[in-house]
Length: 169
Image (tube, rainbow, N blue to C red):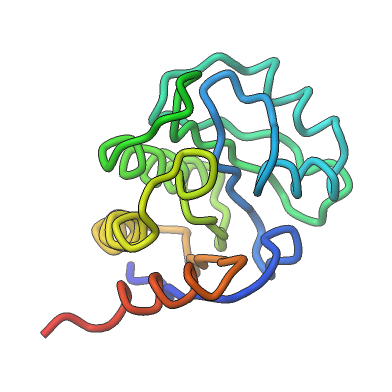
């Protein structure tokens, strides 16, 4: 079933969805950037739950409760290992792993940050192209997802994801 894909500008902890994704390292400890914002808003319990489920392989994902946040779950997608480096393959795998979790849990909406573009230093435009292609390719497989949101904190991310979602042709 086709679902809506949108790009919004703002803080992912305020996203209007049922699940949010944290771009994690494979040990699942939460440092700065998106992870730091989620931990500050939702509480350290989110990190404690995540770390207890790790380590995982880069490209995999797990989910935890959302602490004080209003979401059903927080998905922790390992887009890098302890070397804090990522790749197009890991970004694609982590995107799909996150979608698999919400599909399995029958959750209808999910918000993603731009994977690997902070600490990982991955180029924003490349990230946007990889993640939007992975989400579009997932559409025919989905039974429960109704809306996928790319929640961008800055103008650069918003512009890159908006461009990546433009119709082809």
